[in-house]
Image 1 (cartoon, protein in one colour):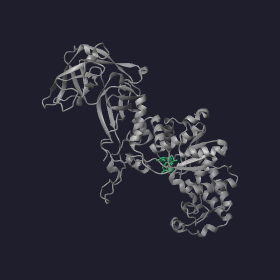
Image 2 (cartoon, helix red, strand yellow):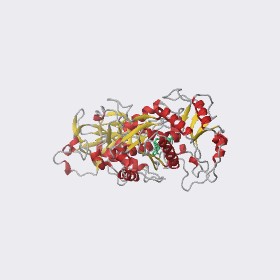
Image 3 (cartoon, protein in one colour):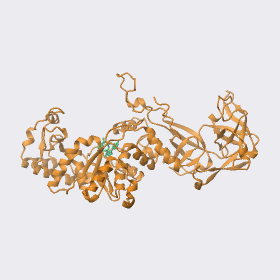
Image 4 (cartoon, protein in one colour):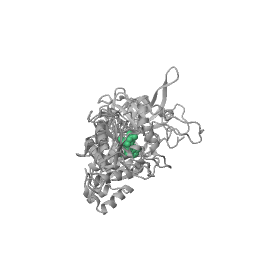
Length: 575
Ligand code: ATP
Ligand code: MG
């Protein structure tokens, strides 16, 4: 995965890399850089996690180090194997490789308990037996110091005995709790004797019923980092106030001979806030559970499994992480930045194809019935090395309904009676009229073609026309389901009060769902699209980038999802 010799090429300049650079210059950890991505297996990864993944793996890659994938599965009740599998698949999909460094925090439970017992023995932890309510009252507030629990002065022997009995399952949930003994008057509330072990009679997805005490996250995380020899532990800003405890805990345990110095260093960065989506697990669960979307991997969902079905690319996410940057203060990134990153990568890599999404028949009345011929279309306008493909042309073609107007509005350059246009890669035709049903709806457009005007033949460019239409031969077309996806929410910050909106009008984020974020069509595709493999990506000319659905698309019966339009249509329509 990592190539230290050309590592500099991938090193971007953000404050985290600057801090790492400084550590290396001081020879800390002998220049080693080791990071981790530590998801809790209680949900699917979302776009925000992609930022953290790109950052952690990217930093390790840039310095020739390793990044661990560690499941932070210290909370027994909410975690499931299903999530573990999906997380592994998503990180791999983003193109990152943890090598042999796949870890589960639950594998460290034994060591964590030993750390806790060491702290008790060193007089740095005690078993408290206050009720949760009393404990809250004793903690104090931001402006008032807390006060000592009456159990704080228990002897080391009593604490060791109580903790052993907690582990042995003698007590029900919530009756006792193990706390670090630091300072109840600390201005930092997180240092007022934080809880480190609680009783929880719960089955764990990996350790089963082995344990009935579980470590608190703030206790477990630093220990996990130290066990794995992490050098730089990157986390989001809300953990800034936890850093003093992180450092305190590891310093105690280093003194106790558990871990060598230098100890891992916690560095906080701003989490990703992205407009037009929600990234809170609770809200994502609600969207799925209440059926507002078709599941976790619905292409509208800001999950990585959703992104994959949507046709977003790993390269696009990496570019996005780079552009969104790493900062020390919270801010919002506009969805258009993410979409533009996907467009850039797809514009470069996706072959061009033709699809008619709203089909109307065009009949070339002077083209012989039963005849057809090939036209040639380049697969990529800027990459001749990608070659070209054949597109059969015949007497009846599908064109877009919007490409014909019986009575043209001003400036309309496509088909209307008397006007000439070019059928892209084919002939110039002149519109002669249209056919209608009893209600007056246009059912077909008629035209005549100029046999000496075929694209690529000598003299073809003597025809000067303003319109250039895409089309598909009716006899050869592949009919297919196409789903047009768009942004899940119609407003930048779902659930937030609108500018100028009445202050008493609290909004629910569900009120801001974009009802047009999914539209299903029956389209007519050029025949070369009939046999494509699932997850193949294309630009459909004039329409945007599309992907063959990962699960529903089959050779012979393709189903396409729109990834993103060709241009941003949201800027001008901003509320
Ligand atoms: P929870 O509330 O369940 O802890 P979480 O979003 O923090 O939710 P984790 O599984 O704990 O989920 O996250 C794994 C890692 O991803 C953490 O290091 C976390 O800081 C990071 N992360 C989560 N959300 C974002 C985000 N929006 N931007 C950047 N990093 C994020
Ligand atoms: Mg978390």
